[in-house]
Length: 222
Image 1 (cartoon, one colour):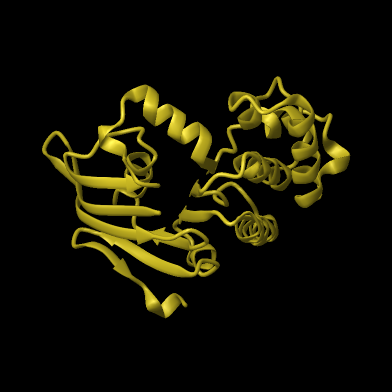
Image 2 (image 1 turned 90 degrees about the horizontal axis):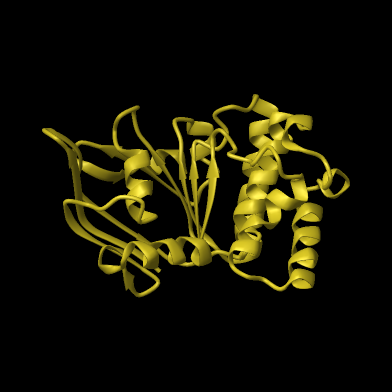
């Protein structure tokens, strides 16, 4: 479903990624670890088509992302990808239900179908009683659960999570990670988790370390 082949990326004279190889099938959940500045977020941006590699190819769902136009990449992200971030990125002027329904609205989902899907996702993340609240009225753990529901509302094939527990306490982080894995599995999506946390990484099926030599397996975490 996703194949990264020989991908390299530099910014000026600084080589961030060198010859990255990665294959991911539908239903697989992997974690990528690495030091700050190792290129983890850059790799996610390349996979999402938000940036372009200097060399190599990224194929997603039979599309070469680099060969798509900017509009084509936007459409691919909107339809087939979901995103979870460390800072949640909820829209403050929208309610919980409206935030979760945002990808459905962007994809033109019929109103009643969208309403049912929003209700189902909020029930799945145990926030159905908070649908009319605004992000400022939620705890960090609740905001992350909204972000997870939003990322999965449109049933994406690939979910990209960039340090999703970085702003949470240990208990909230454990709850969010359990929910993330459960909902990804339930939706049949593949997922890539980028994290500094060995505890968070251990929740994945496979763990990799991103370093100068490339993307290397970390079997001791499994």
